[in-house]
Length: 79
Image 1 (cartoon, rainbow, N blue to C red):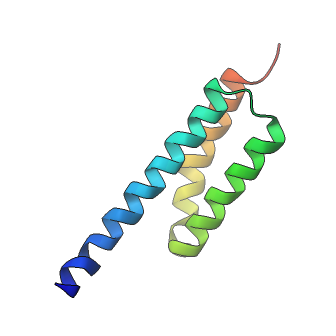
Image 2 (cartoon, rainbow, N blue to C red; image 1 turned 90 degrees about the vertical axis):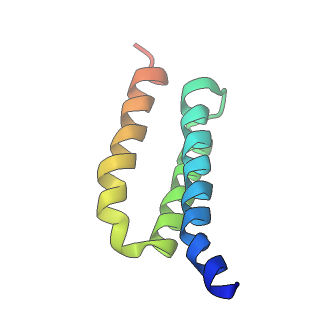
């Protein structure tokens, strides 16, 4: 039983992380959060990745940080 729980742990971490990413994207796109609040949430995501998957930081930067920048440019920057 213990080994099965351990085997499910990466899936749980991935699901939790994906929920946090989705929530963060919602904050960028559809909320009235300030830029400062969004920066704080982004930092929380970075810390979570650095803690859980330090070897994956370059991948995180390439995939997620570029996505977050694009969403901010598209939905938050004022002309």
